[in-house]
Image (tube, rainbow, N blue to C red; front, side):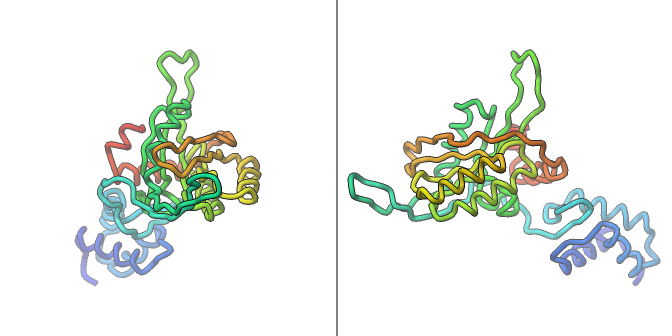
Length: 260
């Protein structure tokens, strides 16, 4: 293969990543191109890869040193909507089925967290905005020290997974656990009609793993959020904190600036 230009190197990197759904290490990518094109300077190859990994929105680091090709984050257009049918009590012995959008509860919950002073600022995200079901909380908030605080503390990241389908408490729990990789506190938010057995299990798991548990009425006009288990504060993995921060910044620089 003849000597490659910077653009040709970047194009080849994308091809290699596209052939590796589980991702490739930086060193593997560089070694592969160096082998294919020994006429190309290793410094040029390394510099081109570094530039691409820094600027590309469709390439992300999924773990330390491993990069993968992804769908680029969408433009900021509000949280992705999710329609679910739930049974809402309409009076003694009666029930009606109402189509509810999950995202209708995102901002009310963010506002409720601020009322409780659990966060200084919170934003509704949801859907697949940050490029992954297990990496996109429905609500992201931060708690910052106030100017009046005599003893300051480090910024804390708070996340929440909201489910309106009463049959999905286990899914909500799994996602809330995944968010602990990059958040200091994580909440599960479920409707108060999930059933006694499901609630008891979810409450026990929340206490065991330090996840906050909140219930609400499936009425976006008056959800009446209720804190059942307080979230424990943990130290997240800073690698995943920065990975989430980059995806959030790519999705919405405005939300990122308001949070951080």
